[in-house]
Length: 295
Length: 229
Image 1: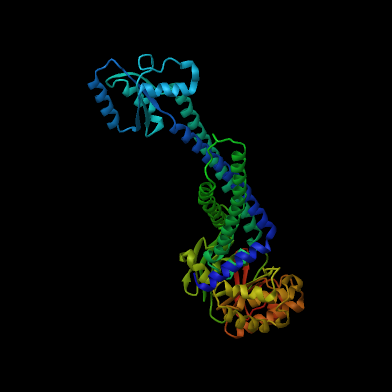
Image 2: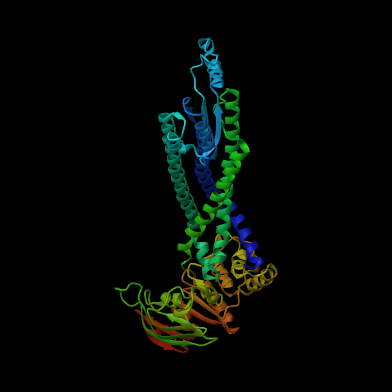
């Protein structure tokens, strides 16, 4: 594209945005509303995923040792656990430590059971897997290991948690996809209206010998600017909303709600919303005007 | 410059021929009136010359190019050699006279200097120098058509095609427009004018091609409208 034509396209894009200011406001408004909804939902979804991932990380397997098994078998068990590829963390918990913990939780009730002779608890291993979803499979496998008395991993609770997080993810993806499709439809439709208003200008350009790309460029740049502006406003709004949410969580001592830090969330949103906004603007313009170029 | 060899056109496969076996040759520098009643096929012929549509059958050559075989990407370059004037002017009404004319230069990538040099020149040619900064919507029909003419010639095209250029104008303005077209023609540009204006055709005594229900009935050098009927 010659430099003159590029300057002309930029100038025309800005002039047209100003000349059709009501249409520009309407187009930007549509992008703002849809991207605000999409961005808001993405923000919630990022945090839901983060919280569930956090909960998942706390899922562990407790393996109780059969005290009657030979010491050689205990060593063999320890060696096999250490070498297991699915296990991220293997921690031996002697019965004395287990009693200490119980005492911390229950207090005086366990008085008199502290001695090695009276301690009814067993030595155990606390294990974490690399993938929390693998606990069921790993626990089943561990049952057949030597010197193993019992294996627990909170079967029903863990299964429910995984089902719930899967559901949240699926619903989140469906909703985000739905919102993205709605945004594409609305933006393309609004830009088609702006192109329609200027169909006469396009027709004249065709008659005086303008190439299709020369005609498209100002519209494409215009769509890009509408999209970028339409993405910047929801990003600013989401920044303040998220900052307020973080402060609210902190001031209400809701420490179990481990929300993601603001810079991380904003970086993710910018990564998705800016290309989405400008991309939708460009595509919306380019495709909306093809019908008017057939002169 | 324009050569039609047995061209036919129909808009709908099941419809009638809008143009039926049309043959003619228009040479460089000619002034030709295309006359005939509404629906005779005059506008269809012009649409073919600017390659908006292609003949259903036959060959139409413009500047030596077979238009049916022309790639879509070449069409803008063909149109830069053809200035078009319309009955309804087709101007950007909210823009100034200067901008409307400069528009035709900008779309072909002309520099600012070229635009500042060419536009005043054509404004003088059509007698609108003092209206350069006026908005089109504030001008009369005659003045608007002169802007249309200025826009058509500003790129120095080899041919001008004017579709009913005086259709919306009073007799005085019509003569003025025709005089400008004649001046342009005298400077070597080929001019094709589709018109209903019997008086003008008879007075100018130029070549007349008469179309009637899609058929070429008369092609006469120095013809008159009446003889075409």
